[in-house]
Image (cartoon, rainbow over all chains, first blue to last red):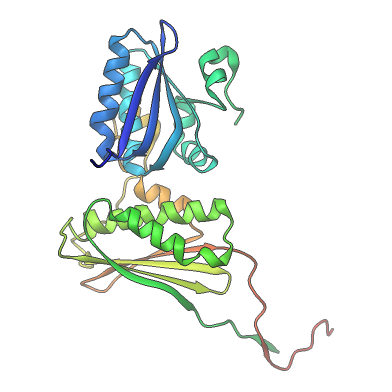
Length: 123
Length: 167
């Protein structure tokens, strides 16, 4: 059976924070999976969603658009997005698109879960 | 007066892909394989792969309208210190296909405020990933030409009279 291009797992870090582990691709075709993951985390009470990109294989402009869509939804519901596990190349793309100003980028999961007190990577 | 002769461009790869979503992954993999012996720095290679994927996606979706019967033609050349990738589709008529001059500049703040569609990052990424971008049309075909520098320009053979350092 062919594995889906986007594979997401949600796990609770604490009562207010959920980690979404991303494996595979993030493209326009990921919309359903990403939004379902967002909704599942929200229903579990998460106010802060941490996106784990350690397993990301490929992301294109369509995937960037999906992250923006997720951001719009998070802003509307007063939820925060953070991320870790991005390669240097995708960090560069986050900086070019200014996504890093809306989604705090961390070097690792520990600092991401520590939250703003743990400080993201300085730009 | 001296003249530096630049070596003729060397074709590294030439292939065609059906205009099927997902084939941009095939394009970037084949382009990456074609430059494997050139020792392109990893960061530049990643930028080239992203630019190729985005340009191929545009060719598939906009230039060829997603029609599997229309091919995207891709050629990879080495020209001195440059790698040049051309992506050709059937969107060469002025009123068809994707026009980079008309594309809206994506602005994240405006997108978050709902003033722009969340999508529309493709051309923006391409422009920031390559050293030169050229688009030409001939009435039937559109060719996007991506140029990325991979190292210092090699010194070709000097022809004519060369007087280096002469006052």
